[in-house]
Image 1 (cartoon, rainbow, N blue to C red):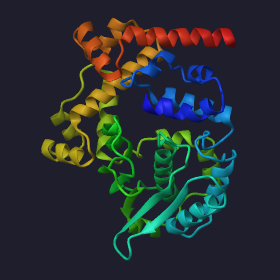
Image 2: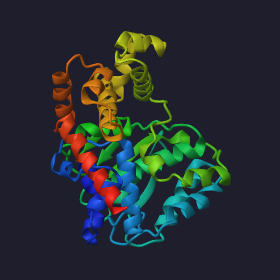
Image 3: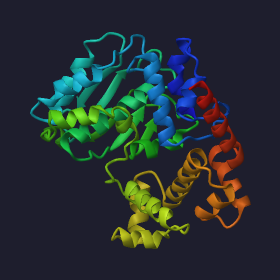
Image 4: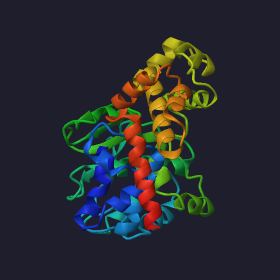
Length: 340
């Protein structure tokens, strides 16, 4: 819910009514007051699009000067003609330095060492939630991976501010060890990726831009992290059966030993149990928001033997009950229908 509140901040400052924006994402406004509440990727994408349309600003009102629609696209076209990824990132960061009031982006080299980093040397002054800064790290990392057609593994991510209450989410967001209280906000990777050639053409770029930046923000890491392979396996299994595979069964599907799988997930700052909970949680929220399936049937489909255990789990995940979550979504949908 921190991210939902953060993406609304710029619209609020401009005096834009945020209730229709939440309704565009089918997000019950009552959830804003509960720090434990969660929304699906589809709900958040709907909200993000609504805020973008309302502000007409690619920075969503979170920088002292707006970024006009089309700026990101022109940066991508400018970078596409470069010989390799390093030149593309240098051109892209130079492009954004032409506009005052935005973030100061930079590509840092490790002084001849094996590491490089994409950094935000000064955050936007109106981004008190750090949402825009974190989005920029995620978008640039995934854009770079898209440009060369391979996922670039991040070695680390660090942030110049103290750990927030939702600090446990960062390992999932960035797929690498994270550190707070650093001297800057940046993400590091092996420098050899900078020599990788770009493999995309303008036709592919047009398709990507038609879905950007929402796809870059919500896209999983090309299914190449171990955590995403496990998540995909669990989600597929849940669609077929309420019984999720065990750690051993999942390891066998991925052709590794249980100990190896457990160790690799730990390196990615997660665990098998966390991923199981996340898959069930996301399926529960999607079921309540998008369908009319009775709650008892939804609980059984997700593998809960009793309604009460599903209610306890859902409250732990989101801070509210399944019934309250569904009522909020239904009320907002009804208001949407009346408005339309």
